[in-house]
Length: 417
Image (cartoon, rainbow, N blue to C red):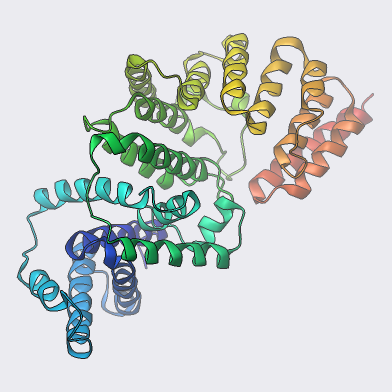
């Protein structure tokens, strides 16, 4: 439909589920998702013929309410002995829709509550993240499966078990007591980090960048940061990291959607206001004593964003921050990025040696990094072999196109000798 993107329906799905869950309780999460899905289906069936309404979100809200009332009445007829159904229906029918400003404020509060429902400690960690991505972010089981490197059927089963567990426990739709927040906050931040990364570099589809996911992650992190009970230094650090990286989104691809390396990006197009905001958030993140991975990654992103040109980048500092990150997380991906930084500080041979034993042979960026370092050493046939491995493993057309261009560069350089 003209003027409405897939992102609109994804966000509306999450909004409707949150709204319905507030009205009906977390134990009716599956019911809320079914109602939201039906409202969206009716929109897709109706709008192409009757036109998109002036206020599509309001139309979807009213349709979801009508669907919910019909289903609740049906339950009341066929399951008269079910405790609470009649009262639940009457509460829904008698609750008026708040004014727009109240709705926006309530939606923020509800989103915050829903975050912590998803990360209840009696749900498994895998279920927590999958449920948050589905309920809060509106990602499909297929998109979540790509993020987890799992099958769609496995994710669907995980979601069913999570909803069943919520129903069994009758979890409250509320932000937990302050004493319970830290453990749940870890899961919330991990999910927002994952969601942002999926937007920054999509795992599937035709687009390298899905900016709407990045901005949604920033919005949710901002919700957490501005609340006294959840404004933890880790939240500010993650928000700073997101803002630094989001400031460069428009320059990550050329007009044809092809990947641009950092050194090729137009720094004048970076969002200076967003970089300033990120810098303030990074300052606020230093109020506590804990040094999280988000602090270190935000520091690395700041080094890139605050350098006036590529030649001014403080690579020794970036290398030091990666050393601290690896000591904290033991992440092989962090080790890969450290190897790239090491190559900039001590030369490509040192970088290659640091990548030799990384357990990332199925990760295309490992082979791309090796190819770049071999090319810098003038070993073009070896560089081509690495770039071909990377191309075979890359999943996005923009990545494959970029790697093919690197292969041509190396072949031309070898032939000109």
